[in-house]
Length: 263
Image 1: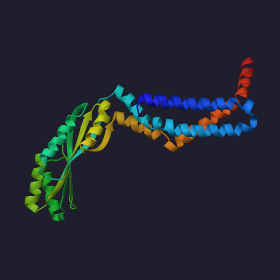
Image 2 (image 1 turned 120 degrees about the horizontal axis):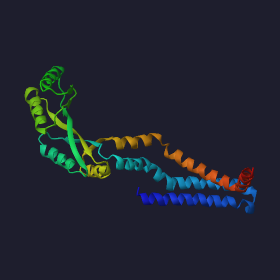
Image 3 (image 1 turned 45 degrees about the horizontal axis):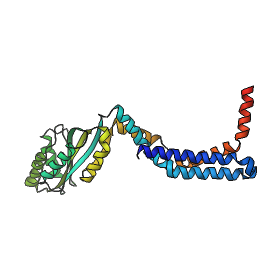
């Protein structure tokens, strides 16, 4: 939400509470029998104001904290994305997606160290042969599932040509067909540009697996500390009730503090 809109919403809510307070000050005129009515009105006004004006601000609060944090440190934010190819020969599609990522606003660096192949099912004997083949390639990790899923992690940059070689080996030596593969990337970007980059990646149909970094940690921390939207609206209602109650007994409270001050 725009910061100016947030300020306007907050001012409107405060004016609503001022209205409740002013209504309570009229109790000497409208009679004490209306105290309960004024308190109920205060509660309802608080609920309405909380739902319409405070709720949007409240939901954006974690991201506001994230924006503040990004002003301090904007260099350690990562978008974890994946590029999918349903056709093993569509390396152009992969390269286009990589170029799209590298042309993001605030782009700093790109790392790829994991990929996954989805293949046709194969036997346990074939599984052992695949594991032996992958072990000779010195990958940092590989997991082979006979249902047709092969996960591979490597310390070097993932090359789509290398994936094609594995796919051809699977096909030529055992008739295992590669249906599609996925390459996972970590893109280091400027935290200021993360929202624009997310929108752009969604438009290009590049999947965002997760967001990590110090800025996101701050957002997640604030989210974990906040109560639910419903609880927040109830708190606003109780605040309206409290303002009404204080205004109803404002004269008595003022006299008490004056006497206390004199003593």
